[in-house]
Structures are given as structure tokens and as C-alpha cells.
Length: 615
Image (cartoon, rainbow, N blue to C red; front, side):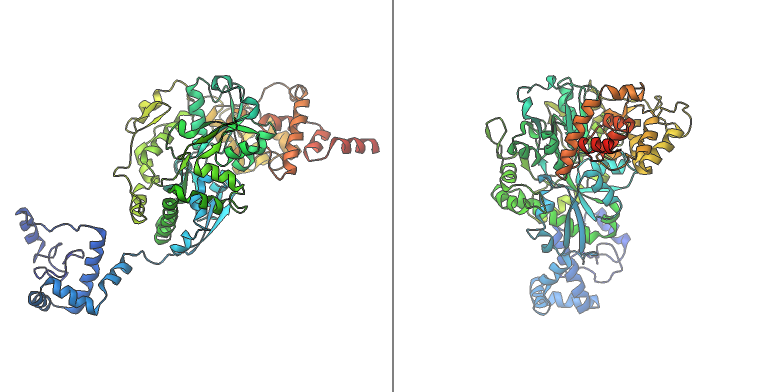
């Protein structure tokens, strides 16, 4: 008798021997019966399947032999027999208990997040009790930046994390790190980003006038980076030649905009609205006007976590999807804003968070706009989202060679798991896992990603054997080359092995050359890592090229500019923030004299002058 067949059918066998459906003495008889189109009817739903499992177990216990069960059923009838059995055994309760997942393997969990509204479901599930509802004790931990999120999840300090939707793809493919199988079971939010410019640029609304601008994005492997690049490229601006793009943690973007270190950013909210609130920026365009209902952030976990603790994974995912379902309702948005605005979460005024979540907001140009879907929440991880992201990774040189788009998308974006849990919390998942969509007027067909990639005029294509991008195996004799073994040893000594590897990989992707001498000077002055200098994984590709003229002559023409930037950096440091200095600044610092080095360490000019006089 099959586990899922009706145990109250007297024509079925109770014994486990026989055919797979339970109606026949042998599998051969079952096959003959199937040929005559006398096949077993399929089970209608998951609930019916569970009922069959429980009822089968009960009937086996009550009637060890088929003959007794058949006589009982023939005498009373199926419905009367079911009612009689239910009086002595609570079939419905047992079915519900059986349908529930098994006990969680790990109740106490740590989930990292970045303080932005994209993480709303992950954050709100803590103060609003969604984790406890599903039997978990989750500690949501505010984290400084995406590189830290990635490293802590890979090191298993976090069980799961709020990530940018391209990050699990990059981790799985080994882009920017060693390849590790990673999964993205749910999208956290759709839309919810914007391009914000400094208020001084309110008359420069045409992207063609942005040449020379410095922009910030949260991370290299982010929708923000890809959408900004896509947007400017569609307006004829090469993002690698005409502008500068830097990786800056979202909490530090407004401060750097105020300090004039950057001209704008494509950032997650509430960063954009906070720039308007502080009067230092205006919203140029919402990301939904570039690609409506695009994914941004995600709930991600390693494949090891998913497979080794399946019940914990299911409970955690269901908690987040349950919170997402609550967040989809506009009438709940103000309540959510109040829950996630406090200092231990977003650390933003409730007014700022409400403007983002409700879609009624000031744009910084004197207008109040009403865009209800400025940010929305839909957990379904479309495979076509992953395919589009991978085309942009390839477009900008982050991955090379052939990419099996569909295979990677299916392995990383767990649409099946999400669809099942969406039904359980009252959401309706789509029937398919892939769809076409429009980005800035251009339709994306996920079945032809290479054709889509070839259609772009502005893109980066670096040959694998281009000089200066070889691995450190000593084949290239020029000490200024990225691949030179001596330069690699120098980088390791100055930066540490991991940071040096990240810098080398990024330089390789861009085909840039970096003089080895700066690393020696950097090591001598102990500029790496720490201080005001950002880590190697936050260097932007554009700044890996350094002029090959003498260090002193390079320094002499920029001394005043360096001093001004250091003053701005010190002001940010005093506010408890980490300033952004590009690689030019690091070069200048590396060749600066002792006084400039002391200035970088935080000593004022007056104090240094006094020390010279005393000496």
C-alpha cells in the first residue's frame, strides 16, 4: 500500500509488499493494470498527502492483517469507519503535527544586516516577533559594510545575512573571493534606491554633464553599481573613463557628500532621503524609473547551512517571508517605520523612514512626490534577475569566459523553496521562475543573455593575456606589473595576504598597472591597513593606475589639495566616520615627508610647528 493512498479503501492492500500503488499483488500486475489505464488517482494537495500518511499509520496499527481491515471497512463503509477511528484517535491534530517541520537544529542564530530600508523584513522580524513566532531566537547584528557581511558569513560568524542580490552569485562564481556554494532563497526588497546628487549640482540634471564626477555605490557587486553604470552608459558616459565610482558603506555616504568628497551616489534608502532631510542633496531619479520592480537586497545563506540545518533554514526563511508579507501592505508601513528606525537598527528619524516606506516624500528641489511603490517587498527570486545580473558582471569585466547562466541562477536563487513558503503565509507565487522585463526601454530576454550583452556599445572587455594582468608567477619581468612576483611579495607585506589578493584581482580585472614602489613606501610609513585609508577591497578600479613620473614631482603639484582633503578626512574622523581617500591620496601620503605623515595621524599643523620650534 502506498504511503499516500487512501487507507479506508477496502480494495487496497495494507501490506508493504506488492506494487507501488498498493492495489496489486506484484509490480508486474500493476504494470499490466496501468496498460489498461487503470492507474491510481493522484493526490490532490499536500494536506491530503499528510492525511494519508497519518491515517495509513493508524490503520496499520489497528489492523495488522488486511483481512480484518477489509471486513471492518466493508461492514461500516469508509466514511463511518473514518468517523469511528477519529473518536479514538485525533487524526486532524496528528496530521497538523506531522505536516509541521521537524524541530529546529539550532534555535539561537546570528543574522547580519546593513542599516538600510532594504533590510526591512530581516530587521522588523526581530522587534515585531516574527522569528519567535517560528521558534527561533535570532540576534540581528548591525554591520559596517558589505565586505564585512561577506567575510563574517563565510567565516560562519553569522548563520545567514542580509546581502546584495548579486553577492551570492559572485561568491558562488568566485568573483572577488574564493568560490563557495551560496544561496539566495528570498529577495528582500524591490525598487527602493535612487541617484542623489549634491545640492550644488541641481542645475546639472543631464547625465552628459557629469564627466569628472565622483560617485559612490555601496559595493562592487551590487545592483547600485550595475544600475549606475547602466544609466550613465545609456547617456553616453563611460563609467570607467568619464566618471569615478567608489565603494562607500551606506551609513557614510551622506557625510562624504557633505564634505564634498563625492558629487553623488546611487544608494539604498534611507540614505537618499537623509541627504534631502539634511539639505545636502536632492533626488535626481528613483531606481524604479530605471528598472521598475528590480531586485536589490536579499536574504542569503551558505549551501552548507541550508543542507545541514534544513529545519532551521526553513523556519528562518519562513519568518522572513512572513515579515515580507506583512510589509507588502501599505497600511502597515508606518508601524514598520517606527519599529526599525531606532538606533540599534537604522538609527534614523522616523520621519525619514516613513517618507521612504510610504512613498510620500520631499525630493530636495522643493517638490513633494507621491510614489507608493518607491520601495516594495516581493520575496520571489526570479531566475531571470540572476541572469541579468550576470550579464552586467560580464559586461564590466568582473567575470570572464563562458558563463552557464541558467545553471548558476537555478543553483543560487532558490525559487522553489520560496514559492512553497509564500503559499503558506498567504502570498501568491508566480507559476514560472523566469520572465522578461524592461530596463531603460530595452527589453531583456533571459533566454538570450549573450545577444543582450553584445548589444551594448559601452562595456569593458579585457583580454586574458593582456600585459600587466598576469598572476604572480614571475613570467612578467617588469616590477611595475601586477603579476610580477616581487611586486606581489611587496603587496603581501604591506597589506596582508588577503587584502593584497583582493587588490591584485581587481587590478587584473581592469588591466591596470600599479608601480611596485608605492607598496614599499606604504609599508615603510605603515599606511596599510587602518588610519584614514580604506581597505584594499574598497579601492575603486579606476584608481589602480598611478602616473609613472617621479614620486616627488607627482606630489608637488597636489600638496595643497592633499592638505584640504586631509582636513575634511579629519573632520569626518572626529564624527566617528571613516572618510574615503582614493588611491591618489594614498600615493601622496606614501611619499610625503615626516610632517605630512604626522598630519595624517591626526596632529594639527600648529602642534607640529610648535614641535619644530622646540626642537
